[in-house]
Length: 130
Length: 152
Image (cartoon, rainbow over the protein chains, first blue to last red):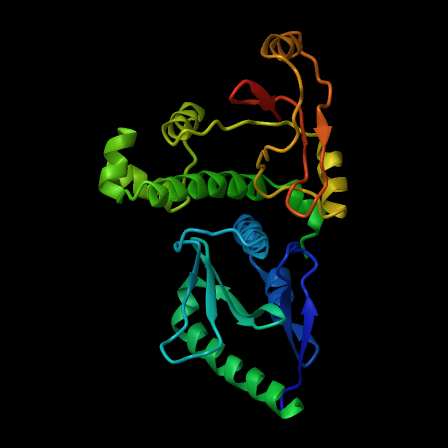
C-alpha cells in the first residue's frame, strides 16, 4: 500500500498553504522541480509565481490557473499551466492546496488520469486514517 | 531546488505579479461597468484580440501601453523601486505586497499648497505607516481630494 504524507511547500508564501504530496518519502512537486529540464526552469519559476498569487487569494486568468474539477466531484481539482509545464492540485478544506502531480504538456493526456487516480487513493487514505 | 530568494530575485516572479496586477484591474473595471470584451476593447481603442491577449495575462509590451491601459480604467500604475535586500527582508516578515494598494485612512491636515510644495521639493518624508493584515506599505506620495480635506 502506498504511504502518503504532506509537506508544506515553503517556496510558496501566502494566506493559503500549499503542500507537496509525499509518496513513499518522495515529494511529487519537489522531485519534479529537481528533475525539470534546464530549458524549462524559467517556466517553473513562473508556475511558482502563479502558485504564490493563488496562495495570496489573487484571481488569475484561466489560461494560467483553472478549475478542472469534473461534474459531481466534491474535492476541487486545479491545473497550473505554462507553455510546456502542468501542475495538478486539489483543494482540501481546512488544509489548503495539495500538489499531487507535475509534468509536461506533452504528457498531459496520461498525467490527468494519473492525477485523478492519485487523488482517489490519497483521499481514501485520509478516510482510512479517520 | 529553487530557493525563495532565487524566486524573489527572478524576472519571472515580478513579470507575473505585474501582468496579474494589470489583469485584475482590467477585469474589475469590466465587471464594475458591465462591459463585455467587445465593448471594452472599443473603449480602450484596441482590437478585441489584443485585449484578449492582455486578459489572458500575456501583457509584455510597451511601457506606454501599460500606462495607457491603466489610465483608461481610471487607474495610475504607481511604480516603486525597492532594494532587493529590502524585498527579501519584507518577504521574511511576510510583508512583501502582492499588489500594492493605497488605502485611504489618515487625515493629513495639510493644505493642498503645503502638500504640493512637499512633493514638488522632492520630500520623501513619511506621512504615515500602517501595518495591518492587508496594508503593508509606507505610503508617501499618494493623495486624493475629499471635499476640502486631503487624505493619504
